[in-house]
Image (cartoon, rainbow, N blue to C red):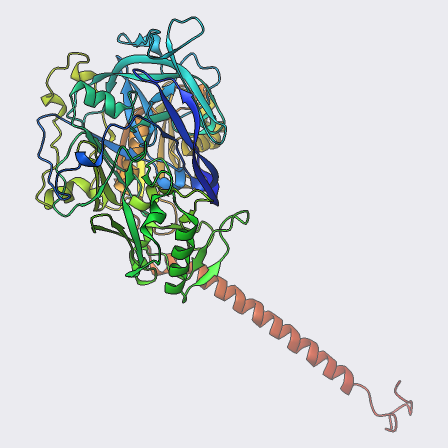
Length: 638
């Protein structure tokens, strides 16, 4: 389920069975985590499915290299930021012609769903609602013995209820799903949920819906595997603390030769679990029994959860070990006084230097293989104190389950090799994933050019949407994006509302209003041409190529939704520029001016004090002693 960026209390995450839900093809129970949330945290539910694998299935060596399958895969970009938004999204297109949606990628959910045009109780999300009536290939999933039916027993329905009482419900539909032009995989038919009601945090989130990657008949992965169009595997690569975004692949890839593997027993729990045995801090093993990581559901890896949550004994040992290693730092309060975050100041703002201050944490798996975690894999930035960081690993209440969220796998390629019951980890820069895979002598899947795609039986290639990565942004640090926008509104009508328009642009592009600058406004017939500049936030700051591509993609693909009072818009042209080099005066003028003002104030106070002292001295010496002789022979007053 989609929970918007909220603050869970560091104390409370638990997995619990919530309700039985309808599934297409088989029934199963759903589970959700009871979360008392944390800053910008995202926790998504984990759904049960029947055991379909055992340790016997894990017969291949732990470092076995997957051979490239003849079956294609779907390479897709990830957007947003884990701690800013609480989730990562990908783009999925449904219907003919395609309708685009931003869906939260969640390995703990099964069903994929989007808001339906018939939904009167759906919030305002990133994209328009799905309109089945506009898709020539849409088909409702008719009522059958394998699903829960609506009151009229005409159509299959789904229902989801979550621990914080958000809900999603609707009907099941079948339509063409397309994965973008980076995908080798042709558009495929798939069953998905068309929402008619959403409540709670689902209603207020910016993303449109959920893309379920868990095990189950409604999972998009299971559906594609069942069709035989991809191998039984998918991969996720989340960006780091400095740069968001990333990559997702549905299907198999060539794993790098130094990928670290953990056994994942589908029969152990209904979730993607790993056999975690030990945790080391600065090379020292925590004094814990391996069984501490095997309680209840074991150690669960879930892309839909932001942070990590350890059983009580493991958390206390981990916290104590970290505190011993960073005694030089000052412990401070967290960004929100309502939560007892464990935060430290004095580490500096350069995340690439954090290893000098914070220790490396190692996770050791059952076969002795080790995954090393950098500080960015267990810390998050303090939002109010520069150079301060907080632990992103919390105690899981009294629940003995170990839950590892997205923070643990920042800048890590995670390969969910379901066919061989293992999960692989490879530390990498996710923004440069494909280049690094090529350097590792394990060639990644080569995407076909749009005009090289073979004809699709269900959807012609020219209906496949343009992916943001098609924009050719130079490999520079992007300081600003300048673009022209044509609005179908008269110049004189637009000018008085330009401030309001600026706020809408900022909201739709997920940037601060201070970053949006009006460069020029001109009239062209009955239309208006507006030139905007989007600046990177902060002094001397820059934005990543992924962020820049996402902004340009939102504009060019008309995902920016403006009020009707501004008419429709056309995205004309754009270009990016590096950060403007600052002179010594620009970098230090605030300090210099402050120093000058301080000096003037001090000088004024000193001059005033001297003047007062001088007047007093004059007043004292103006009186003669009482026994002195004066011309009038009068005494001076005492």
